[in-house]
Image (cartoon, rainbow, N blue to C red):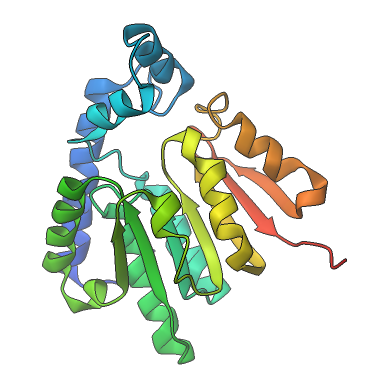
Length: 244
């Protein structure tokens, strides 16, 4: 007797996800260094060496403009299951790119809302208009099951997340490591007790994430942390501040 699949979704969505993950893997294979993902300190170091007099963030944006670099499939499945287990309905995704992981978030939030009667939304963020347009096309292929759950904010997420945030159940940090801590600090006032922060590539990108990880691991900041055993690291931080 076969078990239920990890993801509850129509066949056309599952087929699209499989297609997009394959494209992402092919791109990563073409640009990776020593089997590490593009967010590793090694790749950032290459950019710094090549563009000594340029803005490294700008060069990084150029490198990533046509890249999926989607959250790994097993991490997406874990996040989907976690959202269902938490009963989470308000999610912030920092770094939407072409919207692959956003599809999982939408499926999970939709399922939770249907089961609990709660309201909620996914606030997705993407700096590049070109990427945002492609993401919307993929979501349209999924249909209203996915599209209706997403509020996509295009532009500098440090600005677009300043207003209009609900009480946040989960924050997914899948962005350039230098932006991770500033993003967390913008969202922090809206985190509920027990909210979860998921951060990708915290092993391969440990150097780039050092400020974020130091903040998360400082006991006074109220986070309980665990590095999950996924490729390149996947940090799970639970927000449990002590009442003053």
